[in-house]
Image (cartoon, rainbow, N blue to C red; front, top):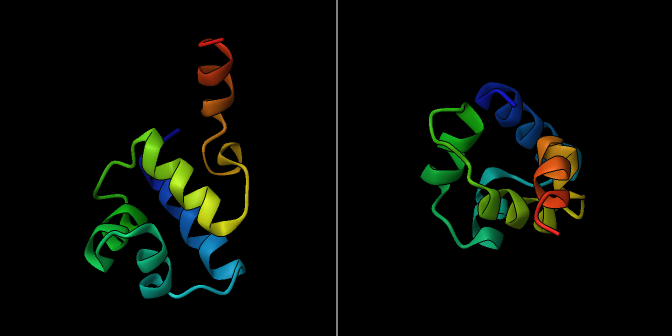
Length: 76
């Protein structure tokens, strides 16, 4: 998935769930600068941070990054 699409989905879900960037950054134990860069698409979000973000937002990681479905099923 293109970085900007992932960035937009993270931002949209964060807002939908009612979190500010600062609140989500605190839950993720990252700086607001890191989260902001991920949401702008200027910093690559690896699978581990995508999983942490999805857990903090109460959604499945695949809702943020659909390609994780195929990547995870290939590791079984």
